[in-house]
Image (cartoon, rainbow, N blue to C red; front, side):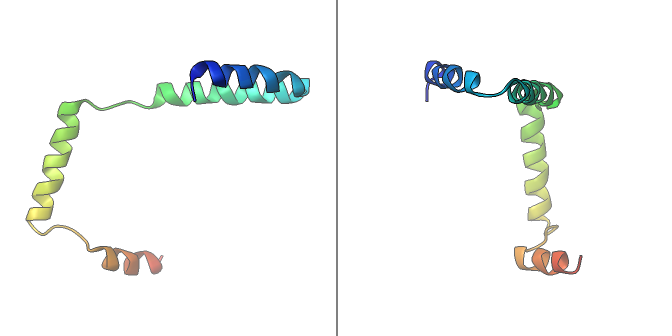
Length: 76
């Protein structure tokens, strides 16, 4: 769906809401924007470093098989 199509639908539905619902929707939109600012993205270099470290752990046998992880989780 294009941005223009979304905007058109939004503009069609928004006036149908009560003032209270419009206010709640506005607050929800604002909360999305705040949470996006708090999400810090890592660099490609950091991502690759973490992947390489994970692969090294797996190669050394430092991992838990899925079935064993499920057994452990069922004990919680």
